[in-house]
Length: 458
Image (tube, rainbow, N blue to C red; front, top):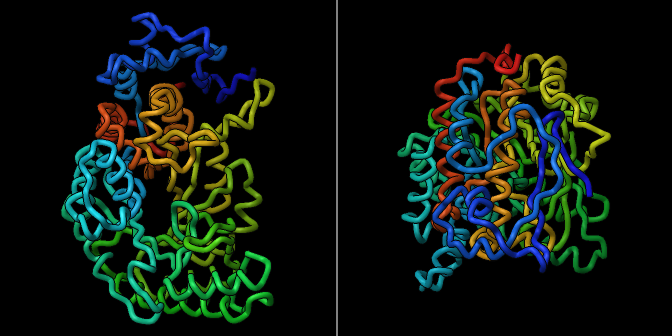
């Protein structure tokens, strides 16, 4: 059995119970649940702890003391929380909650947020009320066009309007074809159908989109490239100078290869085409331009090789978004291989890209479900495996506020996990949202500076 840790902070998981260990004392139950309103049936699940390494200031595991500890933190001045706003995902998760409570009787696409704007607006209001200052907004191509030529931006307008009404900044996902949330690439319906038919006869379900046609699938790859260029131009003409937009996101997690919604296969985009898109944005807008990536800060040469040309082109309008998942980091390191100092890693990126603003685009703020239940709704995971929620929000996540966020000195923190927090609140576990509000309020009182993010620990 391995114990995973971040330098002196343990990242310890709760293990599933054995058949001979299904009882909790009252004290153990309160420690695990923090005395929340969750049903005492949780106790029947049982918990066993992995062996841990003590540190001088261990994080508490009950909600009251976690919030107290958060209030003692000194975040860099100007820090704020944002998140990713994908209306279709928010709607789908909300419908699953309603169905679980026998409160859903509509015969519509369960992701069609435009048919129930009240649900989407309610969730945006809850996020704003709990300290979320902005969001990376994702409205995808097939919601705006059927044929890839004629565009109807009414859905995007409605989403921007609702976010603005609740005081949330809008970071607009431009795509033009790669977006957050699985599977990644999203196309108009006509191109989905063409690509699916092409793959069915081609034998290789993989396509490369560049300035030049993919030799395997020249026609459809050229059509996708042409659509992406046309869609980007149209979106920039409408929103490139829109004062409601804070910044623009190009792609998602480039240069990763991603799946394609509605099609069995994968796609990726060339650096040459990304540079062309970046130049179009520079010419067609006055906004900062963000590019987020899964490349880990322990690989600075990868940043330079793959993202360097894009960031150099963007200059002081460039924003480098980091996607960071601390629980996944921890599980590739053992007691004999501590994770390097995070502040030093971020400072190296600042040295290499001095003109580029650094932000967290996706900082893990939801559990990473184990194999076998990934892809289920959050309400199903919560009802079947509440220990996954409790373990993450009361053990794994709070220490990362120190080990990553404060250590980095990064002030814009995009948290990944809003649908999970909202589901928790609907399921008598409102601690995640309460914790986000406490973090946001503490950030507003931040006393550290970005030049001295670790002064509390000196």
